[in-house]
Length: 397
Image 1 (cartoon, rainbow, N blue to C red):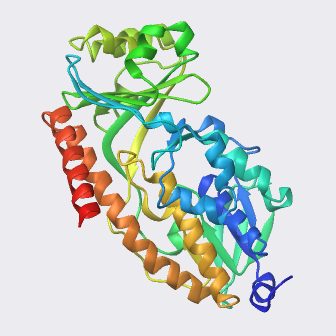
Image 2 (image 1 turned 90 degrees about the horizontal axis):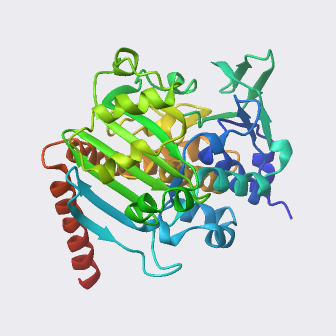
């Protein structure tokens, strides 16, 4: 039965720009509460399986949003709690940390592949709620507080609320702020090793069931086991923004690229070099961008941001997707509470979002400085030890 508040919101048109985990979660929680929204995705079809590997979903943020979306039990059935395993080495192969998850459903940050997560969200979402092939060109504020959305395919929509869930280089963000994403100083090269357990059992044993970090010399080798049995590898460099263009590495020519990349890790332990030697295809270069920590804007009628569009941070705290999903839940529930008063819902959401997102962005920045600083493996272990000690002290207080 539709409540009066729901009916008031039903008379409003809500557009979500971007069909990633944040945009889909927002649309689904609104749908669960009887409120319609339309997700406009620039790609011609769902590409979430192609845009990243395994994600750790945090209890207080991403999992909270899945509970609000009615998908928590499905998530538990699909999540890999063993994916919380974590191993930390330096370049000599010295082991600093070897954390092992203690059985099923015990941890607070289980893993799930991005594609699997988004498939779960899409299956629960009304198919008419998402439109592919809609690349936003411009969002024009109208005098009555609405926005006219103009898409590359020639379509136009007029909405009461436009939510930018469109990532690092958001087309919606300029409606609210002049802030732009800036290069963090870190560039990654993503490698892929299919069926690692059968094809390369030696590397599978080294990596274990979750993540592996090897840190030294302002560089990193990071391995991440995915649910499909593949191993995603991230070679991370403290480099100039144009390094991918000037380094002379052709990522299309896999064998030649591997030989050149090994040159950057020539004095690293041979066991760690296998993360490069065993790579087979689909090498991708990625520059890491950030927005200023604590970034805020003046609240404006009919528009807001979630996820990377609002608070882009480096991936070194594992918070990106979790913040996007938490944003989605916070905004959706604020809309449910305030009904047709969308501006009040925006103000409440943004006030809360600034608080928790700035804490995560600060942690991400601190981790980046440690991982690419001196004595990185030792310093990261010391940080984990401090966090654990603080947790124990709070639990016993």
